[in-house]
Amino acid sequence: MSAAIKERMGAALKTARDISELAEREGRDLTPEENEKATAALLDYKAAKKDFERTQSTEALKSALSEIGVDLGLEPAGQKATPDAFRQPSKLKSIGQMFAESAEYKSMMGQFADGRINEKARVQSAPMGVKALVTGASDTSGGAFVNTDIQNILEMLGRRELTVRDLISVRQTESDTVEYVRQTTQLSSAAPVPEATSAAAPTAPGTAGALVLNAGGGYKPEGSMAFEKVTATVKTIAEWVPATKRGLADASQLRGLIDDELRADLAEEEEDQILNGSGSGENLTGILQTSGIQTQAWTDDLLTTIRKAKTKTRTVGRVAANGIVLNPEDAERLDLLRPTGGDGQFYGPGPFAGAGVHTVWGLPIVESEAIAAGTGLVGDYTKAVLWDREQASITATDSHADFFIRNLVAILGEERVAFGVTRPKAFVSVDLTA
Image 1 (tube, helix red, strand yellow):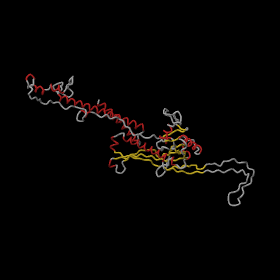
Image 2 (cartoon, rainbow, N blue to C red):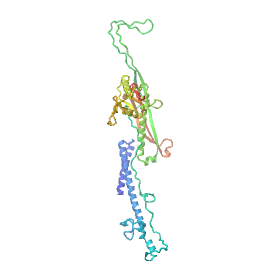
Image 3 (spheres, rainbow, N blue to C red):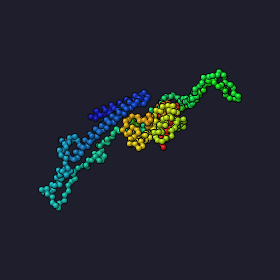
Image 4 (tube, rainbow, N blue to C red):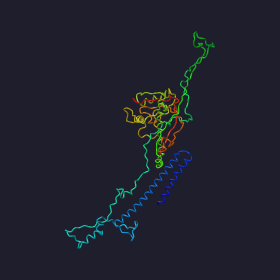
């Protein structure tokens, strides 16, 4: 049985090693499928190793119990007793019964005629050789053979759900800066014009100034447009974790866990920057901090305020809003709204609604912990663009500080992105507090 378990251990370890070596030869990280397969192989190896250790412990326990049998005087099967040759008694004997049948007891009773002890006689037997009781409570007794049941369960603390990146436009760039043109003034001078009744040219003004147009000349109004060039700079979002080489080698899953945690933390910071980035230093300029977005003050109640914000995106922003981002606390407030003086029913879908997308005034409700409670953001999220310069990557090195001589490794996660709002009026920051 031990040989079969060893073969299973070897096969599982080889599978994981082959996957890792293939990725190293190709100079890349493991794909999600490879990572899943390698992790499964390592878990199988650990389970097999556990079975092997249990088998070895069982053999050791049998040997120890056989030796205890010799000490307790259990009858061997032949003249020369071996640990596996003892015959167990058909019925367990008490300590008292074993003492009554012992040579020490019989020697003591041989001093008295007919086995009767005079009341004034001194009675003392030689000590009977019964070893200490074997228990499972102590590591110096049977407890040494009890293996801890270690489950292959790893429960992480959990990460918040990320939703905003799925709403906005995501594009690629190969530069450190991104420039785009944004209209600031649009044509708005169109008007009905009567047919010309005079072909006379404009006349010079009496003093310096514009030419005087002749009445009835049929002149059309002139319109104008204005634009601005906007530059979005690529910023770096990064984080690193120190680890020992021994820790990474001995705990095969540790590197993968660190990589996943780093990527998740970068994504959370990216969502914070998309909504709230201040634009100073290495911060992106988030939607809520972009100059020119609209605002909607609290008006009467929650539903009225949101509806007015939606109107502003249409009449001023000239877009059809495609969502509202809310903090989970504000989304809860919406779900629990009930009509005043009503029958207690909720305005919304109620507690037994399905898992579909909830809406308010036709706007999909998108919950994000990145936006502060008390603030909502209504808008057309296609008018916000994230440019990926370098998608999230994970690298490791021992070249940091004195890590080389200390067998330490720095594991670095970073991404480089630029962000911009192409039409600020397409968004309305909504005050959700009375």
